[in-house]
Image: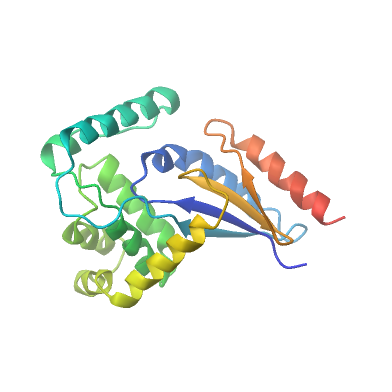
Length: 213
């Protein structure tokens, strides 16, 4: 039997992904302990929320997203810095941040890049739709800024992003974040528990134990 894969399908500028971060870290850390009895590969998979755009976001959409932030804070306690909406020119464009995560993946720093983008966006009122902002965030986790900016505009990186987005769309997802367990040729969508990651853990271990019999 091939090794099962748990896909974590995300976008670095998805506010619900930020809200799920703590539960996801606890869940993925606990799943890592299943080796070697129940081998499982955890794969970060970019979904691609919003294509490239340098157009300022319409005011009504800005208000909608701010209300989503407030809703997430109310339900999950997740922190947001609303200064972003007055200090930045919001753009509905997450593909640059997605490419930044792909570039970081080549150096095994995808998780660090994701967290840097999330912190910059949600806590420090930075705009991860902009190349310069992304390069500064990347520099903060050890990358050469000039090299990173060049990579963000590399055609091969962009092609890889579109291929990954296409793969994500073949999975049974309902948005971001999503969890899909690929096992024995089947892709099984998993319910996200934002406040009770143990439920998801129990479901995954149940499936793995059944498959190993």
